[in-house]
Amino acid sequence: MNLLLSWLVQSLAVWAASQIVPGVSVPSFSAAIIVAAILGLINFLLGALIFNVLAIGTLGLGYLLAFVTRWVTSAILLKIVAAMTDKLQLSGFSAAMIAALVIAIIGAAGDRLLNL
Image (tube, rainbow, N blue to C red; front, side, top):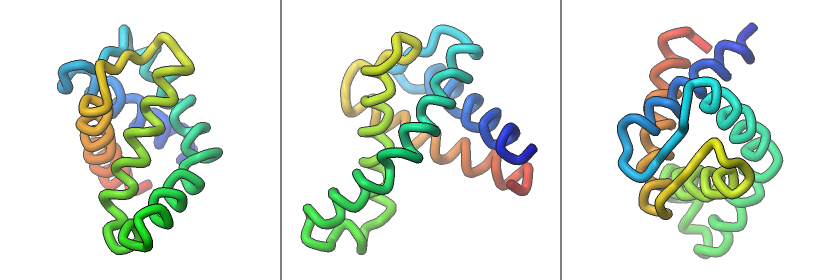
């Protein structure tokens, strides 16, 4: 049940980011559900790898600034998802960075409210 609630929260966060951030487009809430599922799968498969590559590539500074490294990793993952599906359109990396921040804030707030 927690997985489904967390998926719903992430779907709401993706949809909200598309409404708030210029340059981010998700055509409908059902598309946001699909984008959130793909994003979760790609994050599971590649998230830790990309995070560690960025952290090592910055000579360990990425571990000290883990929030920034995770934020950049999330933006890269959003760009990967946008390339994989036509349900998410990003105008550039700056839009992906802002969307990643919005998704993280709304997702964390929603998870906190639902005690997930």
